[in-house]
Amino acid sequence: MSEPEIKPRDTLQDQLKEIQELLHRHKLVESLVQRQEDMPRHELVEGLVHKQHVHELSSRLDDMHAADIAVVLESLPIEDRKFVWDLVKAERDGEILLEVSDAVRESLIETMDNDELKAAAETLDADELADLAPDLPDEVMEDVYQALDLEERAQLRAAMSYDEDAVGALMDFDMVTIRPDIRLEVVLRYLRRFSELPDHTDQLFVASRDEALVGVLPLGKMLVSDPELLVSEIMITDPVTLRPDDKAEDAANAFERYDLVSAPVVTAEHKLMGRVTVDTVVDYIREESEAELLNQAGLREEEDIFAPVLDSVKNRWAWLAINLITAFAASRVIGLFEGSIEKLVALAALMPIIAGIGGNSGNQTITMIVRAMAMGQVDGDSGKRLLKKEMGVALINGLVWGGLMGLVAWWLYGNWQLGAVMTAATTLNLLLAASMGVIIPMGMQRFGRDPALGSSVMITACTDSGGFFIFLGLATLFLI
Image 1 (cartoon, rainbow, N blue to C red):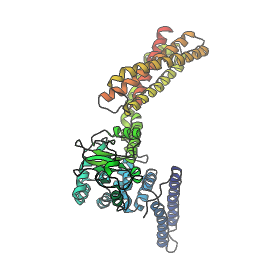
Image 2 (cartoon, rainbow, N blue to C red):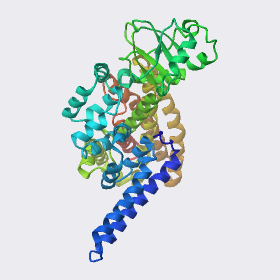
Image 3 (cartoon, rainbow, N blue to C red):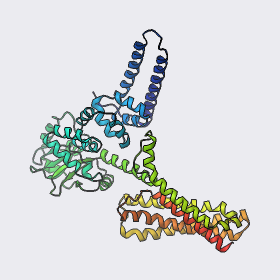
């Protein structure tokens, strides 16, 4: 069967709605049939109705790409998800498990027995199996490993020996290699023996007899060259190469910088191990971006939106507890100045503004710093320069917007001194936000933690407590 056509996003949403409507209709009709238990041949009618809806749903799923089915599964409640998952053909289970999110993959694997998991895993290549292996039971992985040939076992061990954020974990072993001392005509005859080339094959890897990489041959260059030429005469001898222990982040930067479709992975002795392709890099970038967004909100991992309540609570409670502590600290700061607020009620109306603008400014700074870190633009020596720059930005913004709010406070309450305190407090809190926006992510990186982890929670805590203390402290000192 040919590979299903890849659908654009709007068409995918239409397909999702159709499947949801089919599921709703299936539930509705079955409910009506079950109520008519006294009707003639009730069981026969119920069975026919069930088979009709199952057939229609199965036909829709058969025409969909594995990635589209993954989106559908992620968008369905757990009960409907299990029903649809049972309708997917068994030979497609493996590729779909690779496409769904980690949280949804766990829920699907829980519904499968060991024989089903083994059958799904056996349809995957060694590099794909390495991605799925952490979620499979040990006994299943042992059976699958024993069923592999010696070369595939070596590839699986190699892929699983690297950290998730290393190039070796992204490596693909499916590639085409040729020798440098053959003519292009021979290469073309060799390629015609393939039923199809590996995905994202834009170049052939030229290796010596001892498997050392000596160059690459772009397909486009080969097709327009004289067939009588040797590979060594037109190959590129200095291609961009990656090491298996390189950071995946560095590989992503290389693909973006040099517009790569694929890149060879070589050992320290320049032996060809595999390749990295652009689709894998795009998946890595997307996963890292999603993880960064979750970390900024204090979520430890990706969450199935239809997960049981307790699972979601476990994922969210830690940073909520931290946020509660910081909120309590902010409330105690306010409590220190209860007397001042009682004497000048305007302080209660104005102090949320100070905290709010400080939190916004701090999140802007921390977002820029974390992004620069992810792109490798920040090192230990640039911290002071960045801090100085962000403090300058905060000072100008504080004087401009703080001055504007000071004028508004003066106009509202007829007190120029309150306006001056408003300006000073805004400026000082923006300076605090800027400094924390640089110090927090760089400090976390220095201690080996993810710079984005809970950064928005921490910066908000600093600007809230700090903003309240600065504003109420200045007001107490100069106005009360």
